Image 1 (cartoon, rainbow, N blue to C red):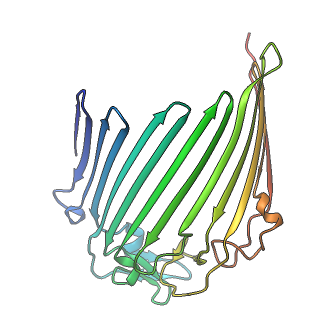
Image 2 (image 1 turned 90 degrees about the vertical axis):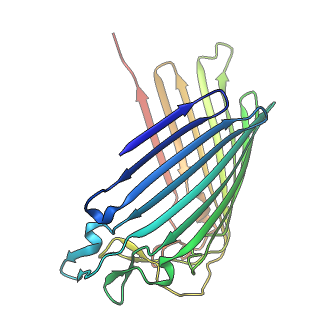
Image 3 (image 1 turned 90 degrees about the horizontal axis):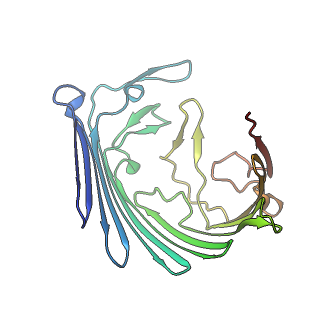
Amino acid sequence: KNELSFRSNQFKLTHRNALNIAGSGRGITAQTTLLIPFTFLQLKLQHQLSSTLPELMQRNYQSNNVQYQLNSLEKQWNQSFKALASKSFKAFEFTFDYQLLQFRKVYIFDQQAESWRNDLAASTGLGQSIRAAVAWTYKGLQIKPAYQWTHFSSGLNFQPEHQSSVRVQWKGGVFKAKKLHMLFAADVQHFSQFKQLNFIPQMGVFDLTQTSSLYMNSFVNVAFTTALEVETFRFFVRIDNIGRFWTPSTTAFVSHYAFPSMQIKIGLTWDFWN
């Protein structure tokens, strides 16, 4: 293993990698991060690389329902690149990031063969995502809309290709003394159409070999949060999955699993000391 770190007024560079000189197929993992503070924006670049053998459980496994042993092992290769740019301008904060993922000979569980394989369509491919967000803050009020586009090759486009959200939040002191602080927030999310994934319970993984062309309809989900704080006393209430009222129960990312029901979470803390 080795680490490298360098900082100057123009940029900051960090690098870490690990190499197996003997054993483990001479696998390697590496991560590099570069921070560049331009006068007009902040830029962060990150690169990750790994070339490693499959996990021990993927090589040899025995249970009541599944038994397998891989006769030959090949290294699976993954590489990702991410660029994040952020800019603050008066009451606005803008963020934009792009992520690229490349993978080759990745081991996927084949339910028909009851073993892990790295020669399937989902074993090699390319994925990309773009996310843009802006936050506007005025006193205690903040409005933050965001949008994300995601696309994979090799028939791996199960997830919604388009996701958008907006968060509206107010936080501040109440009454003249300002000892009571309160927060109100609402989150609205929209997911475009998607394909359901099948879950393989005996292995605890998703079936990425499925070829279903059936799409589930898009849906909107809503959450609400309120909280208060008085000196050492804090209390909050959060309501999730309000979209259950108008979304069919069959609309779920995992096949044979219902859309999650509405949940109400309540919590409090009260600190005491002498």
